[in-house]
Length: 145
Image (cartoon, rainbow, N blue to C red):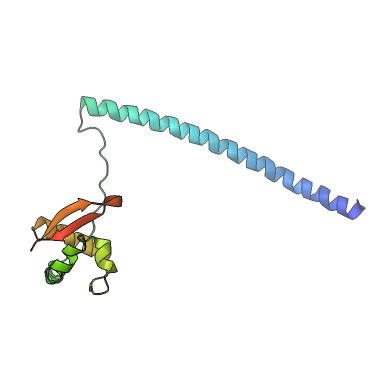
């Protein structure tokens, strides 16, 4: 090897050695902290279980996910009118899901969340009946005629 190449290799080794040591130190610290966190979580689980047995009001409860804005009554009415106008075709095709409605080119609404919430409201009102639950918890509804 030429002297210049050897000098560059030695320089690189001098620069990289401390970085490798730092990486090892950081990895070791991460492993230590993760082990400590796991232990703390186990202790917390035990404490919560004891609190639930002694006095459930003292134990923390799971945080509920906010539902978001409700669907407007106007949107529910518009979707209901569209469903009733197309009921025979929709029922003959095996029912409807939120996704199957949105895939139809003649369905005038594009918001999946609003459509899904409207279908739930219409089911509660008896306009739709739950026919079956499909893959991935897809709800298949049929229009009540």
